[in-house]
Length: 405
Image (cartoon, rainbow, N blue to C red; front, side, top):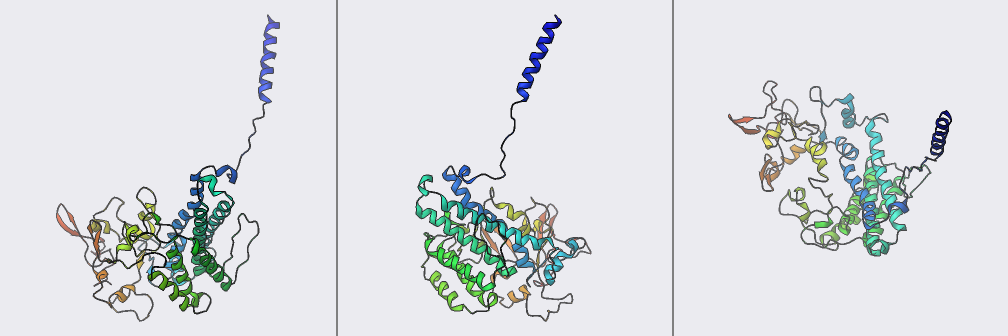
């Protein structure tokens, strides 16, 4: 009996030993190899559009903060205990930021992450056989050209903000790039746009960009050339006004498709601006997809505190204003003597401008005005009430600018 039990025990141990000797190691990957990723037509489209999604995100991040808060029309002020953040917004305003400020690193990291995504997309798609995935060579050329233009836009944006930047086009790359001279960077961006323009599609519709919204077309690429040339005097100390006028005329003359000034000032900013012939390029958005941009930062956080009651939209709370226009009047109602900034005062030089009217959403894609000022009424069960701060009855909307300011 004991012999039988011992025999069974040894057999069991043998079985465990045989199982224990099985190699359980596995090969893990920190990336998906190119050959493993590109299996379907959808995979190619995913690689193509990925940098575009990053570009949309980039618009409302460090590029927006640096480009707007460091200028003379916009500001983030301390509101009681809010928005001081260790003085970071003051440093934007006074141009006293340092390398220790997180947003200085953010402008580099955010932008070059997008540039590297463009490099990867260009490199990968250039190596694929379009017919294998159900594309024509012309479609592949359009994908690659659009990505070149997107990359040029990213380079132009950080060139404007930082000026001395490295140019990276290879993917992958292991070498640390050196900074380029401003004229070298300017020439690189110009070449990217000029070489890409003929391979891009023209705008086909006379009713906006339609399904091409968010894609770089010839007209949008030409508009970037205009921007590049218009800034040449600042960026490289050369006057390229003639070149800028040349591409403006081409756009106006319809060489790249039909574009026209809309009959409403707000049409290019409306929810259906894919039908606006004034829009050359715009990132597409939808409530179920890319609407995240609208519930914070450059949109929701410009709305004054409690103004959601005036808007009749309280789904997202009472607003936490981060941004505001810089004022043109001091606390005694006297206009500041400096020339720059004072955006509202400059609007007031044109009293017939319909945008000076107090903003009101009229429904059915209709609105009037562009500013909030004075009393902001809203309806309650007790009748009409007004947006106030509760601090001595002072209005929080725009600190009551008195006739706009």
